[in-house]
Image (cartoon, rainbow, N blue to C red):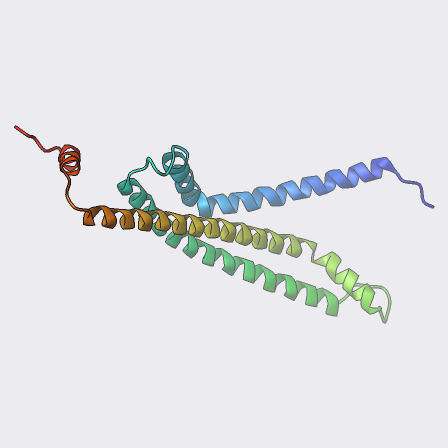
Length: 192
């Protein structure tokens, strides 16, 4: 049995960490560039509507955030579609580079095996794979944020629908003296 070399292990681990950091920074930068307005709006919805309690939020405030979120999702979806073009092009580039390396090997053998051709092609396309992985991960993260935004939009829609239903019920109730006084007070009516 081969002896385990801890230093080799730690060196490999550090190499993976360094490479992953570079890809992660690129992915996060791309996602932030595309989703910064959506992230800011989701933060605003949380701090202005959800954290204090959705029951205390005015209908006008909920309607405003609903409209802003729907508009923001429109533009983020457009940017996501453009990112998907980069993902697709990088995938095509990877396949092209792989096929080129597979069909034109730099191997010393006259008749290399399929496994040798595959290994050689994979080795020659490592950077193409990294670029494709970067765009693929960024596209998945953007899609996830869009899905969360759509869920929030649906939730705000349900809150608004519930409030409208409650308002319709209230509007149908017969007028009572206390209701008339409450509505007058809320409307700023001056009794003088």
